Length: 414
Ligand SMILES: Cc1cc2nc3c(=O)[nH]c(=O)nc-3n(C[C@H](O)[C@H](O)[C@H](O)COP(=O)(O)OP(=O)(O)OC[C@H]3O[C@@H](n4cnc5c(N)ncnc54)[C@H](O)[C@@H]3O)c2cc1C
Image (cartoon, rainbow, N blue to C red; front, side, top):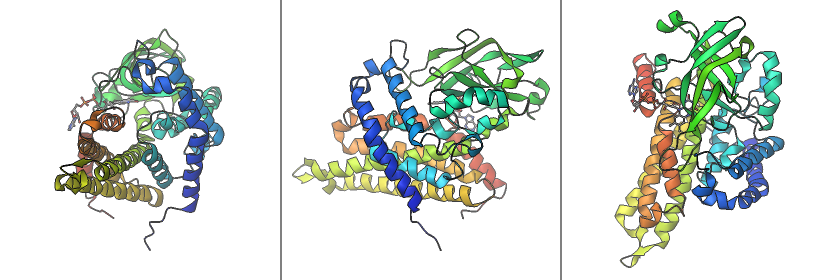
């Protein structure tokens, strides 16, 4: 039997998160309202989040950890509860929050970024026991932030153009290179850094990349700048520079020369999070557009009576229904089938991010001039949707993966 009912335990979690947001996050947001509402106070002169915003983010993470949400999807072997809540819960919980609140970066701090670049990510399973003792308590409490340093100025989609190198020096490694577009790097205490440790293996594309956990020491591993994007006055992503960063070998995560596997470990669930956030945000935007279409009058009737507006509303519904069902089916496959549904994961990442862009755009159009103001937050969703089409594999790279799977015989849509 096909059952589309949301399991009771997931419904309960969603209700408790709603209450948590109301009880704990709403007061924090009121406290920092001035900074939240005006980018001039949200960011400092150098583009970094202001102290107040960083305090708010930290408070939210730590309260979420105390309440049991921050680590609820974390790896069980690291102390998380991911064994109780699989991809279906990940999808439904993220969708529900976005559907109620729209794109709200502070509320998004309830969970570690993408569930794999921060928090009790499976990437950390490969940590040396001593390093686990050093960093896991802070990661678990939400105090310590990590970032995921894979991309470089000349190596985004094409990881095999990586230039960052690590050379062995006794029981240490000396790392040199630049990482770019790294989420949270301006605010993190440690970066996961992917570097070439065996040039021969790397040249043959058979490995040769290792993953290191490198502390931002302010001298050899530094975040040089924030990269503001899409018209914002600052941002979350930055450039990490490593200049003779000396790291003990115990800071290698997982197997030497086989770090690229680590990069992929967790990215699947990150794509589910991204898709769910997009599906939720699209519903939030459509709700606004439907209400507006029923209220706003032109030429003596509500704009919802104009066929052109009806078509935009209907197109949004078509998009959302397709994306939501793709997402849930993919999450179901991840939870119930042994093999990883590679094609489907790429499909939900590509489709939902592109879908949200279309939906947000139409919903702005339905609002006329109001849709362009920052009062309604629609333009925020639109800008965020635009940014989601690039990281964790661009739409084009996802399509490459989908096509390769099809050509290799994966023709099933069941
Ligand atoms: C908001 C944001 C957050 C990010 N966070 C992180 C992070 O935390 N850690 C991290 O390591 N990186 C991060 N990134 C980097 C991100 O992963 C890269 O930007 C992405 O992989 C694309 O690489 P690129 O920008 O170098 O573009 P390129 O790889 O140069 O691609 C340029 C264009 O060419 C297309 N293209 C490239 N190759 C192919 C191909 N084979 N077939 C078809 N089309 C192709 C691309 O789709 C794109 O349209 C982030 C990026 C953004 C925007």
